[in-house]
Image (cartoon, rainbow, N blue to C red; front, side, top):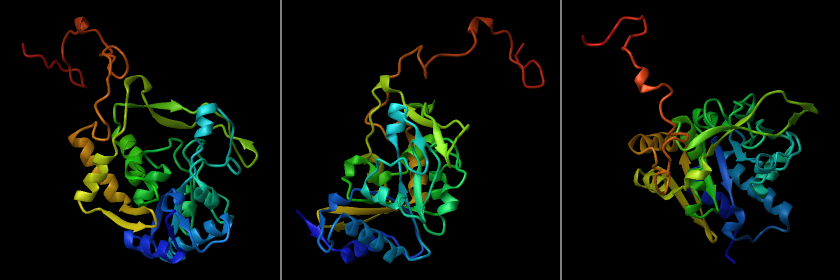
Length: 293
């Protein structure tokens, strides 16, 4: 197994494009890098990984990590904001466990933040996972960077803001779904409804992340460093968002392996709300006849 040291992780993060004071959204698969050679146990490993990031961004920097709880959405389990563990890796769960960390409230797609901007990212976010005033929207607005550690390219974690881009753009292969789960915070059941954007399962919607990743590389927007047996990638959140929008403007299916196999007569191809035979005349909004007679 490949190995690396704490200081080499610090150097790789800096080489990928992270600097002092950054707000960094981290997608991590640390075992994808190999073994950190200078740590004694799991807790030591996680503590040194956090220390490595702090060595780059400093006290003024803010760490954000996904604290997703797909088990809640998949099995309608209760979401207890303070205690429901995330399913996005050891490091995300370690950040969530820190007393100084703040978690955004969402039963499926929460994030956890640690640093001066933690409340700005997580406090009173939108009840929709992605889109306007979500935690991901705030990461972009606050000039955050998206960093991917240890994941292989084809997994798509390099473009970790992609689903936010899709939601803002209102791609036709998603629909908005109410999360069927009870949400608790501070011992109280929340009355707020929460939503997620999900793809239409019946239309064979399959992602292809490499087009987006290659476009970032061609635009010289993706920083990279090799470490151990894996890689570290960093991209500006605004740059990733803006390029994603441009790709979707050119081709709304740019993030997919192929266009969805939509069926005429079924959502989202369910036709017009009124019968064409009932059409009489065209009027503008104040009622004037616009027909050419």
